[in-house]
Image (cartoon, rainbow, N blue to C red):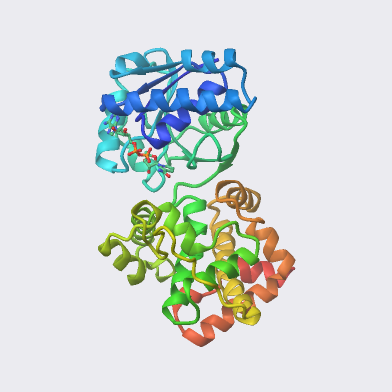
Length: 380
Ligand code: NAI
């Protein structure tokens, strides 16, 4: 079994290390910050204790997993690794510098992967003398619990590595999906309207946060958009929206909102600051959603139609296959159904009509129906 190196012992790096150590790999984690390494070690020990207490691992297995995990601070410890997964700060210049440096320490056969959620793999690969061995392996948070892994070849990546990484990810009992190196990959692109359209509906005064959240929960989503944004953090969610919007050359479909910007300016980042769209102060009653069924249906069908439009557009532009797009949304963000499957259940013509009606009302490019969805509806 190959040895794996991880750069960055933060939330993602330590979670990925746990996944691969549990799968049986020797893993070496490197971080420039000793406190982060120390924290990763303590967290892994606590997680292992919990899994043993729950009967999910034997004490011997938990011990072996920890012995297979090595905490170091020099790239020279990567000499025997056949795969490196980078999970450091989301900054292209820093990542390029790190890749160029790491490449001088690893073997000729070592694959270099990044866990970036928004940066171009092609740009990262360009920093290496052998860009053909650079690839994206994008986990979801928390890595040990979320099944989905997006595999993103850079323009320069040799195809053989795509097949190798897919097999490896499957051996970790994860669900790999293959995705073109485009902004937001699959999940962070297709999911944008879940947040953006919900905020737009609120801004128009159609409903309050609680009612919009309730409408989406009634459609089968585990959490509504506003409670989810509060959990993710409005700073993180806004940054992803802004980065996707910029990367798509300011396509109005992905436009960020003033509502969320203002929350960030106020420091109302969500659960982590005790206030976001909702106030999490102790003893406060949760706001009560409207019980107007027609209103909730109107809200949820509008958001769902926008999500379906994104899914068909991504498939039409060959970002990923329809099957992988459905897998990505169910396994990466726990959607109750794949959006393409869901659209076929609703009726593709019905979805087109919903979008055309929105376009007719607003005359905004944001509501244009994807040619992919329109063609699929015509042929269905
Ligand atoms: P984090 O801030 O929790 O951890 C980053 C770690 O990298 C820190 O411990 C820091 O000390 C270390 N670091 C920074 N520069 C370094 C360097 N030059 N060499 C070695 N270590 C270095 O960040 P997080 O959330 O784990 O994110 C890491 C990457 O994963 C980012 O690219 C992010 O976009 C991506 N990602 C994050 C997800 C999330 O939900 N947090 C989900 C999927 C991907």
